[in-house]
Length: 314
Image 1 (cartoon, one colour):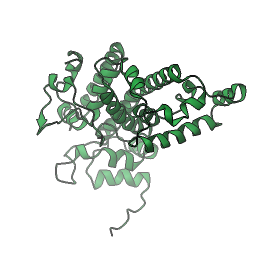
Image 2: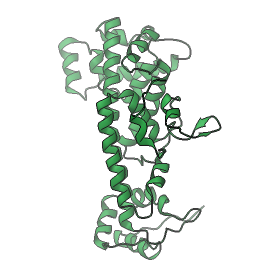
Image 3: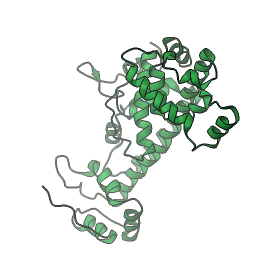
Image 4: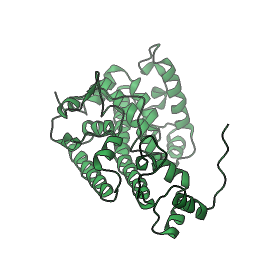
């Protein structure tokens, strides 16, 4: 068993980086302030790998503390940007589920608490049981004034209220176990997306939504789940490794592809402009990391900007 790390003051942390790791610190007080406000582990341990010499624990000569901070801030800005549009899709999906479910079964909460109104197969049974628990928690919570109001005033919580407080993960699972008819109606709002594709999009987006919400490192994150192949993968000439595309399946570019299919065109173009600006700003201040290297770690092909040139259809 290894020896535990010893306690270091913020000043000693800065000294350690400077003297032991040969990281250039131009402003010692600023470095100490940032180590205090961010923390050594999330800042240094979270973002050091790109500045290290491959297969070594040594940093590239001339690596500066400011560069590491630039990469940290870039990732923080990415989280804010992606989170905005993930929430937009989350709200859209929740609203569509509520709309078509209520249209089909009525406004009473007993309808969406009835497992028989879902695709209640043996395969889905465990998911439906878990969903019922989440729905029960939503209709009995006292944490939201509008839920309390509907409960006391009407004795009923309509689904459009309930879906507004469900997590993206719960909404994704709810979509997965809806009847084929309801899933089909929801998919019609996303041209060129079938039920299976939407299911996989939502699964991957849920994981990225959680990364953004919990301030984990985003730009290198990969999910276990993968989105299905799309026409955009081939139109962008993304290389194959065997029969697997090397970008855009479980990385951050997979989220960009999902956005291309699930966001209105004007919203996607706004997102793309902001993303391009963030990448450009970061690479101007990253002396030891090229734009190509940064994109590689994000799972982006070099020609990723062409994603808006092509039709999403076959």
